[in-house]
Image (tube, rainbow, N blue to C red; front, top):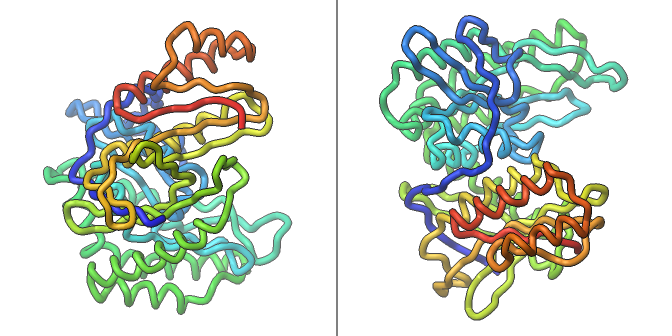
Length: 368
């Protein structure tokens, strides 16, 4: 199945609270802060919700959870490495247009950073770890955002056009220094040079190149079942989302179902050993719900259809099913008592159901 939809804006009421550690601007160092925090400027009563990614790749270390955690902040920043090279025996990932475009949709300012130090991997030859951002560069960009009064979208586009080409030179110099200092072989610079050429040819070229890679990844993922997914129908489907600027986002829906001419878009999270998937998995799924609950003009194989987003949480430790759209408080309490859920797990279920009902999607929790 091929699904196409549009997003003209994001409307979403976040119910899950995220306790962000408060960091004073005088104490701020991007390498020392938690994965998400609240940066406060005491002098002018200004604050930013900030999250940092450990890789430009969206499928590593739950970056969607980190973004979700800062969404309630009035001004939001994601610090993302433009390129991450883990050594010739590891991976090398590049920032893609769809990542920046997704942040723009969520009104998140992107700071593209670069690593300028690392340590040699203790057991694997020609691999590096513990990479650190150039904190001075990150701080300079935060100061720019402090005085920037246009939208996150305009900032992100400006950074791609004006800052990214020269930033790639910094990446090359830094990784060359790291390679020499640690005597570790990294990936050939030709790949970075090719990426820089794509950027220098303009925004449209960057968009098209990223789009092609995302589409290929989407096709590969459609044929793959991840360990944390347990699907009832094995019916993965591709979904392409178009925003009001014409940008395209390529996603793979874990599962789809058509009932009474309604298309159910199902994001699945599974746990083998716990009664609920981890909070990181849940929040990762919620970010998808933010997107899917704002879809308009959804088409299935070129025919308009009503879509209903579903977050499906399953576990080998559960029997039966509770559903946010049909179950009342008494049934939730019975389910919780039956499975001897902790108070924390019960609170998570209540919060999830409230967030789902507020934002017009469904949460299902139960056994496979």
